[in-house]
Length: 357
Image (cartoon, rainbow, N blue to C red):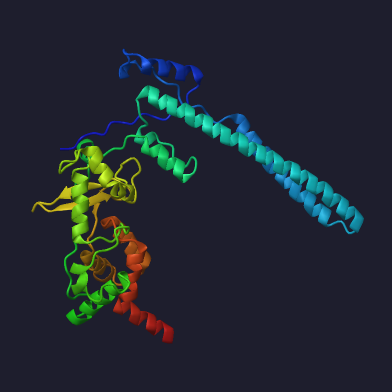
Protein backbone atom coordinates (compact mmCIF):
# COMPACT_ATOMS: atom_id res chain seq x y z
CA UNK A 1 0.00 0.00 0.00
CA UNK A 2 1.23 3.49 -0.75
CA UNK A 3 1.92 6.04 1.93
CA UNK A 4 2.08 9.78 1.64
CA UNK A 5 5.30 11.60 2.37
CA UNK A 6 5.10 14.36 4.94
CA UNK A 7 6.02 17.75 3.58
CA UNK A 8 9.39 18.86 4.96
CA UNK A 9 9.74 22.04 6.95
CA UNK A 10 10.56 25.00 4.71
CA UNK A 11 13.80 26.89 4.92
CA UNK A 12 13.54 30.34 6.50
CA UNK A 13 16.15 32.93 7.35
CA UNK A 14 14.87 34.31 10.65
CA UNK A 15 15.61 37.61 12.32
CA UNK A 16 16.68 37.97 15.95
CA UNK A 17 13.24 38.09 17.73
CA UNK A 18 11.97 35.05 15.86
CA UNK A 19 15.04 33.03 16.80
CA UNK A 20 14.77 34.01 20.47
CA UNK A 21 11.13 32.96 20.50
CA UNK A 22 11.89 29.65 18.81
CA UNK A 23 14.79 28.89 21.14
CA UNK A 24 12.67 29.73 24.17
CA UNK A 25 9.95 27.36 22.99
CA UNK A 26 12.45 24.62 22.18
CA UNK A 27 13.94 24.82 25.68
CA UNK A 28 10.55 24.80 27.40
CA UNK A 29 9.20 21.51 28.79
CA UNK A 30 5.80 22.51 27.49
CA UNK A 31 6.98 22.87 23.95
CA UNK A 32 4.81 21.16 21.38
CA UNK A 33 5.05 21.11 17.62
CA UNK A 34 1.60 22.70 17.43
CA UNK A 35 2.89 25.71 19.39
CA UNK A 36 5.20 26.79 16.60
CA UNK A 37 3.87 30.10 15.31
CA UNK A 38 3.42 30.75 11.65
CA UNK A 39 6.68 32.06 10.29
CA UNK A 40 7.00 35.03 7.98
CA UNK A 41 7.82 34.32 4.33
CA UNK A 42 11.49 34.38 3.34
CA UNK A 43 12.70 37.96 2.87
CA UNK A 44 13.17 39.26 -0.63
CA UNK A 45 16.74 39.91 -1.81
CA UNK A 46 18.07 43.16 -0.42
CA UNK A 47 17.70 45.94 -2.98
CA UNK A 48 21.15 47.31 -2.37
CA UNK A 49 22.76 43.99 -3.37
CA UNK A 50 21.62 44.39 -6.95
CA UNK A 51 22.73 48.02 -6.89
CA UNK A 52 26.18 47.13 -5.62
CA UNK A 53 26.55 44.47 -8.32
CA UNK A 54 25.48 46.94 -10.98
CA UNK A 55 27.88 49.63 -9.71
CA UNK A 56 30.73 47.13 -9.69
CA UNK A 57 30.05 46.10 -13.30
CA UNK A 58 29.94 49.75 -14.32
CA UNK A 59 33.25 50.41 -12.57
CA UNK A 60 34.90 47.48 -14.34
CA UNK A 61 33.68 48.66 -17.72
CA UNK A 62 34.93 52.19 -16.96
CA UNK A 63 38.34 50.83 -15.96
CA UNK A 64 38.60 48.74 -19.13
CA UNK A 65 37.86 51.81 -21.22
CA UNK A 66 40.36 53.88 -19.24
CA UNK A 67 43.10 51.32 -19.85
CA UNK A 68 42.30 51.06 -23.56
CA UNK A 69 42.30 54.82 -23.99
CA UNK A 70 45.61 55.11 -22.15
CA UNK A 71 47.21 52.45 -24.35
CA UNK A 72 46.07 54.33 -27.45
CA UNK A 73 47.89 57.57 -26.53
CA UNK A 74 50.73 57.94 -29.08
CA UNK A 75 53.05 60.14 -27.01
CA UNK A 76 55.11 57.93 -24.68
CA UNK A 77 55.28 60.19 -21.65
CA UNK A 78 51.55 60.98 -21.71
CA UNK A 79 50.77 57.29 -22.27
CA UNK A 80 52.79 56.23 -19.23
CA UNK A 81 51.14 58.89 -17.07
CA UNK A 82 47.68 57.78 -18.17
CA UNK A 83 48.50 54.10 -17.64
CA UNK A 84 49.84 54.86 -14.15
CA UNK A 85 46.62 56.64 -13.28
CA UNK A 86 44.59 53.72 -14.65
CA UNK A 87 46.71 51.26 -12.67
CA UNK A 88 46.01 53.14 -9.42
CA UNK A 89 42.29 53.07 -10.13
CA UNK A 90 42.43 49.33 -10.91
CA UNK A 91 44.28 48.75 -7.64
CA UNK A 92 41.55 50.61 -5.74
CA UNK A 93 38.86 48.51 -7.48
CA UNK A 94 40.72 45.31 -6.55
CA UNK A 95 40.97 46.35 -2.91
CA UNK A 96 37.24 47.12 -2.85
CA UNK A 97 36.48 43.69 -4.32
CA UNK A 98 38.65 41.95 -1.71
CA UNK A 99 36.87 43.83 1.05
CA UNK A 100 33.49 42.87 -0.38
CA UNK A 101 34.60 39.24 -0.45
CA UNK A 102 35.47 39.34 3.27
CA UNK A 103 32.10 40.90 4.05
CA UNK A 104 30.27 38.29 1.98
CA UNK A 105 32.09 35.47 3.81
CA UNK A 106 31.08 36.92 7.17
CA UNK A 107 27.46 37.19 6.01
CA UNK A 108 27.44 33.54 4.92
CA UNK A 109 28.85 32.45 8.29
CA UNK A 110 26.30 34.51 10.19
CA UNK A 111 23.44 33.24 8.03
CA UNK A 112 24.49 29.63 8.64
CA UNK A 113 24.51 30.19 12.40
CA UNK A 114 21.02 31.72 12.25
CA UNK A 115 19.79 28.82 10.15
CA UNK A 116 21.20 26.21 12.53
CA UNK A 117 19.61 27.90 15.55
CA UNK A 118 16.25 28.14 13.83
CA UNK A 119 16.30 24.52 12.65
CA UNK A 120 17.23 23.22 16.10
CA UNK A 121 14.57 25.35 17.79
CA UNK A 122 11.78 24.40 15.44
CA UNK A 123 12.24 20.69 14.95
CA UNK A 124 15.50 19.47 16.40
CA UNK A 125 17.04 18.70 13.03
CA UNK A 126 17.37 20.02 9.53
CA UNK A 127 14.79 18.55 7.11
CA UNK A 128 16.33 16.92 4.06
CA UNK A 129 14.55 19.23 1.64
CA UNK A 130 15.85 22.25 3.54
CA UNK A 131 19.54 21.45 3.63
CA UNK A 132 21.77 24.13 2.21
CA UNK A 133 24.21 22.71 -0.31
CA UNK A 134 27.32 24.29 -1.72
CA UNK A 135 28.39 26.41 1.28
CA UNK A 136 31.94 26.12 2.47
CA UNK A 137 34.59 23.64 1.43
CA UNK A 138 33.90 19.95 0.96
CA UNK A 139 35.30 18.89 4.34
CA UNK A 140 33.05 21.36 6.15
CA UNK A 141 30.02 20.14 4.21
CA UNK A 142 30.78 16.54 5.06
CA UNK A 143 31.22 17.36 8.73
CA UNK A 144 27.95 19.30 8.77
CA UNK A 145 25.99 16.48 7.17
CA UNK A 146 27.44 13.94 9.60
CA UNK A 147 25.75 15.83 12.46
CA UNK A 148 22.32 15.70 10.82
CA UNK A 149 20.02 12.65 11.06
CA UNK A 150 19.73 10.71 7.82
CA UNK A 151 16.71 9.01 6.36
CA UNK A 152 17.37 5.29 6.12
CA UNK A 153 16.44 2.96 3.31
CA UNK A 154 14.04 1.05 5.54
CA UNK A 155 12.34 4.27 6.63
CA UNK A 156 11.99 5.32 3.04
CA UNK A 157 10.33 2.01 2.24
CA UNK A 158 7.73 2.74 4.92
CA UNK A 159 7.23 6.44 4.32
CA UNK A 160 7.52 6.78 0.56
CA UNK A 161 5.36 5.60 -2.30
CA UNK A 162 7.61 3.93 -4.83
CA UNK A 163 6.76 3.46 -8.50
CA UNK A 164 5.05 0.23 -9.53
CA UNK A 165 6.18 0.20 -13.16
CA UNK A 166 7.40 -3.00 -14.75
CA UNK A 167 11.14 -3.51 -14.48
CA UNK A 168 13.28 -4.11 -17.56
CA UNK A 169 15.01 -7.47 -17.15
CA UNK A 170 17.08 -8.13 -20.28
CA UNK A 171 16.91 -11.66 -21.76
CA UNK A 172 20.08 -13.44 -22.77
CA UNK A 173 20.81 -12.99 -26.46
CA UNK A 174 22.69 -15.60 -28.47
CA UNK A 175 21.84 -14.14 -31.88
CA UNK A 176 19.89 -11.26 -33.38
CA UNK A 177 20.22 -8.17 -35.51
CA UNK A 178 21.62 -10.14 -38.46
CA UNK A 179 24.31 -11.62 -36.18
CA UNK A 180 24.64 -15.38 -35.82
CA UNK A 181 25.59 -17.20 -32.61
CA UNK A 182 29.32 -17.17 -33.32
CA UNK A 183 29.40 -13.44 -34.03
CA UNK A 184 27.35 -12.58 -30.93
CA UNK A 185 29.57 -14.81 -28.78
CA UNK A 186 32.73 -13.10 -30.05
CA UNK A 187 31.05 -9.71 -29.60
CA UNK A 188 30.21 -10.57 -25.99
CA UNK A 189 33.77 -11.71 -25.22
CA UNK A 190 35.30 -8.62 -26.86
CA UNK A 191 32.99 -6.31 -24.88
CA UNK A 192 33.85 -7.81 -21.51
CA UNK A 193 37.58 -7.79 -22.28
CA UNK A 194 37.38 -4.08 -22.99
CA UNK A 195 35.04 -3.35 -20.08
CA UNK A 196 37.30 -5.04 -17.53
CA UNK A 197 40.59 -3.86 -18.99
CA UNK A 198 41.62 -7.40 -19.92
CA UNK A 199 40.89 -8.89 -16.49
CA UNK A 200 38.22 -11.04 -18.17
CA UNK A 201 39.17 -12.71 -21.45
CA UNK A 202 35.75 -14.19 -22.18
CA UNK A 203 32.23 -13.98 -20.80
CA UNK A 204 32.69 -17.47 -19.36
CA UNK A 205 35.19 -15.99 -16.88
CA UNK A 206 32.70 -13.52 -15.36
CA UNK A 207 31.69 -15.85 -12.54
CA UNK A 208 35.17 -15.58 -11.05
CA UNK A 209 35.54 -11.84 -11.61
CA UNK A 210 34.93 -9.39 -8.76
CA UNK A 211 34.69 -5.75 -9.88
CA UNK A 212 36.53 -3.20 -7.71
CA UNK A 213 34.36 -2.19 -4.72
CA UNK A 214 34.94 1.48 -5.54
CA UNK A 215 33.15 1.12 -8.89
CA UNK A 216 29.48 1.74 -8.06
CA UNK A 217 28.39 1.07 -11.66
CA UNK A 218 29.95 -2.34 -12.16
CA UNK A 219 28.85 -5.04 -9.75
CA UNK A 220 28.80 -8.83 -9.66
CA UNK A 221 25.68 -10.73 -8.68
CA UNK A 222 27.14 -11.39 -5.22
CA UNK A 223 27.94 -7.70 -4.70
CA UNK A 224 24.41 -6.62 -5.60
CA UNK A 225 23.04 -9.28 -3.26
CA UNK A 226 25.16 -7.76 -0.47
CA UNK A 227 23.82 -4.28 -1.28
CA UNK A 228 20.25 -5.54 -1.02
CA UNK A 229 21.10 -7.09 2.35
CA UNK A 230 22.54 -3.78 3.59
CA UNK A 231 19.54 -1.81 2.35
CA UNK A 232 17.08 -4.16 4.04
CA UNK A 233 18.75 -3.87 7.46
CA UNK A 234 19.98 -0.28 7.38
CA UNK A 235 17.46 0.99 9.92
CA UNK A 236 17.31 -2.04 12.20
CA UNK A 237 20.71 -3.70 12.22
CA UNK A 238 21.22 -7.47 12.10
CA UNK A 239 23.56 -10.25 13.23
CA UNK A 240 23.87 -8.85 16.75
CA UNK A 241 24.58 -5.31 15.55
CA UNK A 242 22.24 -2.46 16.38
CA UNK A 243 21.41 0.11 13.70
CA UNK A 244 24.32 2.39 14.62
CA UNK A 245 26.89 -0.41 14.57
CA UNK A 246 25.50 -1.81 11.33
CA UNK A 247 25.67 1.61 9.64
CA UNK A 248 29.20 2.18 10.88
CA UNK A 249 30.23 -1.16 9.39
CA UNK A 250 28.75 -0.26 6.01
CA UNK A 251 29.30 3.51 5.95
CA UNK A 252 31.23 3.32 2.66
CA UNK A 253 28.12 1.89 1.01
CA UNK A 254 26.07 4.83 2.25
CA UNK A 255 28.57 7.41 1.01
CA UNK A 256 28.55 5.82 -2.46
CA UNK A 257 24.84 5.21 -2.82
CA UNK A 258 23.35 8.20 -0.93
CA UNK A 259 19.95 6.57 -0.35
CA UNK A 260 17.84 9.70 -0.11
CA UNK A 261 14.80 11.09 -1.88
CA UNK A 262 15.22 14.82 -1.39
CA UNK A 263 17.03 15.16 -4.69
CA UNK A 264 15.94 12.68 -7.31
CA UNK A 265 18.67 11.77 -9.73
CA UNK A 266 21.66 9.53 -10.12
CA UNK A 267 22.08 7.08 -7.23
CA UNK A 268 19.21 8.56 -5.25
CA UNK A 269 15.93 7.16 -4.04
CA UNK A 270 17.43 3.71 -3.41
CA UNK A 271 14.78 1.05 -2.81
CA UNK A 272 14.12 -2.66 -3.30
CA UNK A 273 11.56 -4.14 -5.68
CA UNK A 274 10.44 -7.75 -5.53
CA UNK A 275 9.06 -9.60 -8.54
CA UNK A 276 6.27 -12.19 -8.50
CA UNK A 277 8.78 -15.03 -8.23
CA UNK A 278 10.27 -13.54 -5.04
CA UNK A 279 13.46 -12.20 -6.63
CA UNK A 280 14.62 -8.93 -5.12
CA UNK A 281 16.23 -6.17 -7.17
CA UNK A 282 18.08 -3.08 -6.01
CA UNK A 283 16.51 -0.05 -7.70
CA UNK A 284 16.56 3.71 -7.68
CA UNK A 285 14.29 6.36 -9.12
CA UNK A 286 14.70 7.49 -12.70
CA UNK A 287 15.94 11.05 -13.03
CA UNK A 288 12.43 12.48 -13.16
CA UNK A 289 11.34 10.28 -10.23
CA UNK A 290 8.53 8.66 -12.18
CA UNK A 291 9.65 5.02 -12.18
CA UNK A 292 11.99 2.40 -10.74
CA UNK A 293 15.08 1.44 -12.69
CA UNK A 294 17.22 -1.50 -11.63
CA UNK A 295 20.92 -2.04 -10.98
CA UNK A 296 22.28 -4.65 -13.39
CA UNK A 297 24.87 -7.22 -12.45
CA UNK A 298 27.88 -7.31 -14.74
CA UNK A 299 26.66 -10.42 -16.58
CA UNK A 300 23.47 -8.59 -17.64
CA UNK A 301 25.19 -5.50 -19.03
CA UNK A 302 25.93 -6.93 -22.48
CA UNK A 303 22.40 -8.26 -23.01
CA UNK A 304 20.81 -5.00 -21.87
CA UNK A 305 22.94 -2.99 -24.29
CA UNK A 306 22.48 -5.54 -27.09
CA UNK A 307 18.71 -5.31 -26.73
CA UNK A 308 18.70 -1.52 -26.91
CA UNK A 309 21.49 -0.75 -29.36
CA UNK A 310 21.11 -3.66 -31.78
CA UNK A 311 17.53 -4.95 -31.52
CA UNK A 312 15.63 -1.71 -30.85
CA UNK A 313 17.75 1.18 -32.12
CA UNK A 314 19.33 -0.49 -35.13
CA UNK A 315 22.91 0.51 -34.24
CA UNK A 316 22.18 4.18 -33.66
CA UNK A 317 24.86 6.19 -31.87
CA UNK A 318 25.96 6.72 -28.30
CA UNK A 319 23.48 9.46 -27.42
CA UNK A 320 20.42 7.46 -28.48
CA UNK A 321 21.67 4.38 -26.62
CA UNK A 322 22.52 6.38 -23.50
CA UNK A 323 19.13 8.12 -23.41
CA UNK A 324 17.29 4.80 -23.60
CA UNK A 325 19.62 3.21 -21.03
CA UNK A 326 18.93 6.02 -18.55
CA UNK A 327 15.21 5.30 -18.80
CA UNK A 328 15.63 1.61 -17.90
CA UNK A 329 18.76 0.98 -15.87
CA UNK A 330 20.55 2.57 -12.93
CA UNK A 331 24.19 1.78 -13.70
CA UNK A 332 24.99 2.08 -17.41
CA UNK A 333 27.34 5.10 -17.65
CA UNK A 334 29.05 6.44 -20.77
CA UNK A 335 32.12 4.26 -20.28
CA UNK A 336 30.13 1.03 -20.59
CA UNK A 337 28.19 2.27 -23.61
CA UNK A 338 31.36 3.40 -25.37
CA UNK A 339 33.00 0.03 -24.72
CA UNK A 340 29.96 -1.70 -26.23
CA UNK A 341 29.91 0.50 -29.34
CA UNK A 342 33.65 0.04 -29.83
CA UNK A 343 33.23 -3.74 -29.69
CA UNK A 344 30.10 -3.84 -31.91
CA UNK A 345 31.10 -5.59 -35.19
CA UNK A 346 28.39 -3.89 -37.25
CA UNK A 347 29.43 -0.43 -36.04
CA UNK A 348 33.11 -1.31 -36.62
CA UNK A 349 32.35 -2.37 -40.19
CA UNK A 350 30.47 0.87 -40.79
CA UNK A 351 33.38 2.93 -39.44
CA UNK A 352 35.81 1.05 -41.68
CA UNK A 353 33.60 1.58 -44.73
CA UNK A 354 33.43 5.32 -44.04
CA UNK A 355 37.22 5.49 -43.63
CA UNK A 356 37.78 4.02 -47.12
CA UNK A 357 34.95 5.82 -48.86
